Image (cartoon, rainbow, N blue to C red):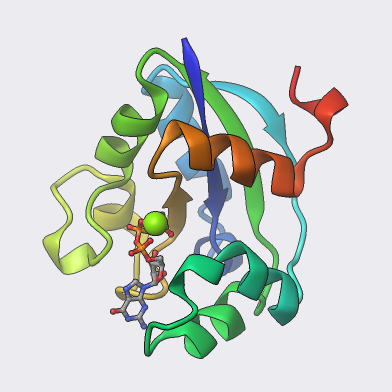
Length: 137
Ligand code: GTP
Ligand code: MG
């Protein structure tokens, strides 16, 4: 098995979808390794999404991602990174497949309900951004 990192984004937490999304994640066969509720500052959101710092939507993304509580998690499953991105669907909910988390809960290309790491390497980096080593056992 391997691991991925996710966070339920501010729009979905504020709308009360945390439980429904966690239920979808567990029913898809992911085991929760670490979980908490927290809120990022704009500076912390900027650091998390530093790879997008040259994109036109970067400042809006940082404001959105720090606008309310989020629920970060480390998840474990066979083929975790790719299977999780299938479960959440395309970045733009207008293009997300039926039954995906983003199709069900995302509001826009930016307020798109959930994050999923795009590689094993980034999953480890992002998990360690939010959780101490002793929380990742
Ligand atoms: P993450 O799992 O959150 O990394 O999403 P992703 O991998 O599907 O998309 P990407 O890494 O390309 O973009 C990161 C986040 O920036 C997205 O999830 C959106 O919240 C936001 N975003 C991406 N593209 C756009 C865009 O064109 N406009 C706006 N406003 N936000 C965008
Ligand atoms: Mg991404």
